[in-house]
Image 1 (cartoon, rainbow, N blue to C red):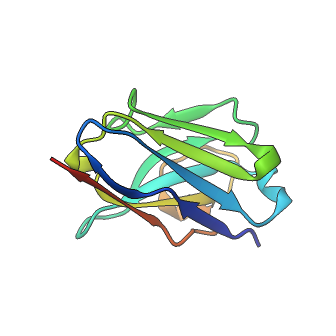
Image 2: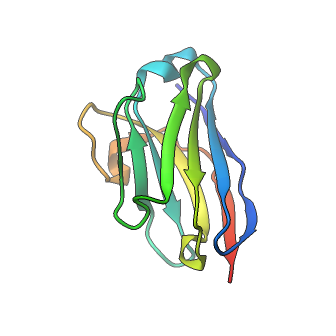
Length: 124
């Protein structure tokens, strides 16, 4: 089973940027679509975006479209989440997970092998 580890979180001021990484333990990761999610305190886990296994297809939640970009480097078994123009509403623990099926969906139940998450805090 693939194990995923997120990194790159931290504290940033509103308007700033961060890049998160999601690194996998297995080479099979390069054949798997990956999703990013986030969860703020007291809220449900929310879909952020997804990238296909080759990286040629991405889609994003409306709340981050135009500000966040997902990319991947399969040679490094790593998927990235570049976050720009951050605002306090982006504060959350960010998770990556591998897609369990071929159909791109925003439902957390359609993803597995969740990482432990990385905290992103945006100050106003």
